[in-house]
Amino acid sequence: MDLRLNIAVACSLLVSLVIAQDDRTFDPFEQTQQEAPQGPIAEVRFDAMVHDFGTIYQGSENPHVFKFKNTGTVPLIITGATGSCGCTVPYYAREPILPGEESEIHIEYKPGKQKGHQTKSVTITANTDPSPIILRITADVIEVDSVTAPSIFAREKEFEEQRSLIGTVNPGCFVLFPNPAADVLRLDLKEHIGRTANVRILDQTGREMLQTRIARISSEASTVDVAAFPAGIYIATIQVEDLPPMSQCFVVSR
Image (cartoon, rainbow, N blue to C red; front, top):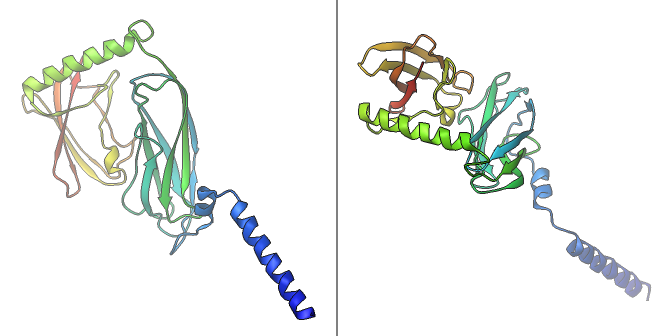
């Protein structure tokens, strides 16, 4: 009799445990956080993990760089970065980031026709614990027309004029925009963060204006000083390690 009673009690407890587990709300993010990555674990410290763009306009392009440092003792290997929507695109270093080195996650947010308060995220998969790492951006998107944002329409018109002008000199060249409003030009190298590059800039007659080497591509290292360049059209030929060379064109106006 005691044996049957003990079995009944044990079965009752088992059923209760199963019901309790079935009733628990499933949280896939919590489960992911608990799964430690395989192999050596890297440590990383971000300067900030949230960025507020403030008030921006529909149709605008909004870049931001999340800077970080490998503070651990093993190389940091980023295996993936995904935005929560197609409007939020991340770029990152494909090569291992060694202990003590700094790098960045470059994010571009294009709200398109979205409006109102927006919150987006980027999920970074790497050999860290916890993994993944979640970066967040927020913005208040204002609906655009020619009255609320005339500067956007003016800039787009200017860009089309520059594109047409460059097309007469070097058809098919990738046009950098915005072109230098001041004296510093930013090359578009966000897809090659962490790699090295050789840069050569020629004017439209073929005269060399500048030759330099970028030892480690980042948002800061991808800038060149064009203060001494006279007004005109210029072509930057960029060789990123063993990749095919690329051309990026721009206009300097004085």
